[in-house]
Image (cartoon, rainbow, N blue to C red):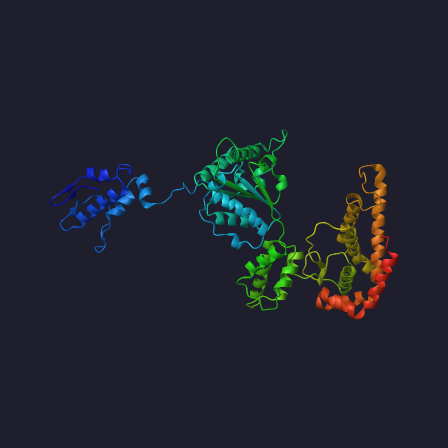
Length: 552
């Protein structure tokens, strides 16, 4: 600013420079008072400012008063500007490769279910918000957290919600961002990442697919992994080295925690490992509530049935189910999805979809429906197996034109009875074809046979369900004995299934006709048919099984 000429006084550059001094020389109130005084003098009539050579607006707004205070705020040194505006500068918000997000729009309210997981993460939030609360106790503040589990279970969403609840700086990166062909780039990016985080503490660093960065280090003979090892070493030092990284919290997500280096997972670097599994029933209910908002249905969709249908689905699959069902309805010029839309999309998720139907002859289709009815009847008779839901003939499926759908079982411990019943259900399709067509069987049992043989081998060799508790399977002496026991188990399952299906010939035929006509047979309809017409046959079968097959 140049000299200001008035009638009585002249304010030189020296006085204005004095106003620019740092706040330590003069309080902000004194400085503001001087600025207000200058504003009064400038605004008074009779005072003019000398013209300068700088470009300016040719048509200034004459009604807009000149604000000297704003001018000083823009031009005064940064230390004073920060104090006068009251803002808290937490450091740069962006580096060459990474960017800080100051507010995550996601909170725990946007994550359905997973109550126990949220409780674990809530303490992490409390640590980030109130770290002084824990300082008086002899506890070490956790530095890292690994979220592991199958794809689509919400690991990334939980990390975003953690940042949103903590209301702290958040840096989201991918493990592959640190892999480059040039030597030293990965290590430099790790340093850049942590330097940016330390300038914005408290800060959460989220590394998605951390197994790409934290994979186990290679052996001495593997020279190709040296650069990756150097990048991992830099990460290890950044997490727990001589440098202080207090205020930086690492969250990693991976589907393959078994690939991570033990040095990364040790306490002091990653203190918590949380497994995010497939959602249970309460979690599925909450997830479906979130994703069904704003998606109208025609009233035919029972919410409780939808929760039951999606057992074994991840959160991403449930969202996709509802989204695709509504998109299909809109494509059909309907404004709400129906239960039929849900069933259609469910079938596409389970077995895939192709636009053209398979061109099968009537004889082959009859083989397919008889085959599937063999599975279905045995599933209805079984007492220890998971419940069957429906039998479907889907000629748009790429590889499985017919299939039987069972409810997903959340238990991972099985009894010998349930495994044996699963074995007979697998063999039931081919046995039904043998009963109706003799030697004219189809190739549709290929996958059933493969799975049946693997199951029988596990039962004998790994689960100790044969004549011996443990077999030294690598010994030549026992190989023949193991093969004989597997064969005996398969023959027993074949005889058991054949006995049941032979008594239910008429039921298989009647159910096959329904499948040919409707392309679907629900378990409730099949059970109703058994109760109404074949209850005596069921009693006879149960009695004979209890007396003649008790030793199996």
